[in-house]
Length: 531
Image (cartoon, rainbow, N blue to C red; front, side, top):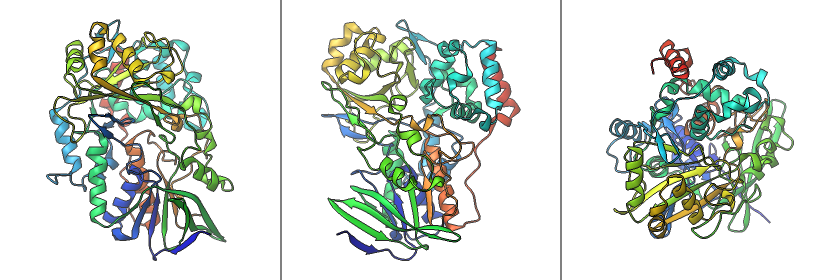
């Protein structure tokens, strides 16, 4: 029989320990004056941070599934972290990020690497018809686009242009993804188009985003008494209906093999992170490939499906969870114990680590990319050890140098493919003997980009809710773009202000598309005027 606990009046329960829940807890405390000890975060894994993760060591190899792009117009992100001190408490996280990016400005000299040579500031290669299609799509109302895909909007030649190679690898789009999401990105990042071929405007944290953002936020919340229940899988929510709406009355979760229920009231608050783009992730090794898992290999999709089964206003999780072949791709993290690889990349690209950003191989059948960050990239990373990250979008196609699909490749084979595209075969043995490459398969990593209809993503405050809000990548926020830290934090801010009835709103989405200077610069870049 399940054990039953009784919640304190005015308690808050956050399901999921990713950046959305952590941000919501911070906004509850900072803006809602909610005592930290009344806030509980329930996380199914053994660590907080969700998709902003980083782990490992120099002996076994470091691992991070990925890192989200950040830039100066992430207003909700910087609003939150302006209140969070760095781990050494010397300044705020926001100040640290802006200070760091004054020193380490992104200026790629090798955004594309083709035929063993860097392509410095590559041209977009767009035809007038492609430009007209981009402009039309940016102006098209979303309800006209419906469930159409990017490939429905452009001729096949568009997907051979260097504009597409750079755009799709920066943001992880595939031709079969949603035209609406592609449109949102075009509009949201209009101010970055003019510098897109050198990655101008992209910002980074000093270390990986787990060490630079999640750990300081976690520390701040712990100091204020927030409760963290790890290895805790929420399995169901029970509801109570009334004439004027509904409320959550019970939270069921499994922990240590025991099923437990928490009874809640309308005065309590429940904030649920819906779905997970890194659910079911699996790791390989230098000599083993990563396995492909599914939605039952974790609790987030199962929970969303269960609570949405009889409530249309909770969205349609199957739209995002049932198309793994269209949402999966692989990343890899490589730990190097010899400087040869980093020195060769520096000389080939003309960029020092941390300056150049993403390097894409457009000839790669995997459409592979790598990025060499400033070192050290992990707190505690020893001197003389370097770490870089990479990924491939087409994981079921044989490689150009290793004649196997990326999904079937070991870390050694993935590094062999990268070495081939860089034309570094003469150094291959030395690099392979002194590195640890860990592949990671992520079945749902771009599921939020899949074609969708109105209602597939629920509102942050579903209609009729008295004490429940949704956050994360799978709730609906007009104008903003998914697959970003900003989206998760904006959803958290919106949820907290709505649940508490505060007379304030999240900062509005920056809309550079209405700035004449931004539009002129984007127009000139697309048409190569002044180049």
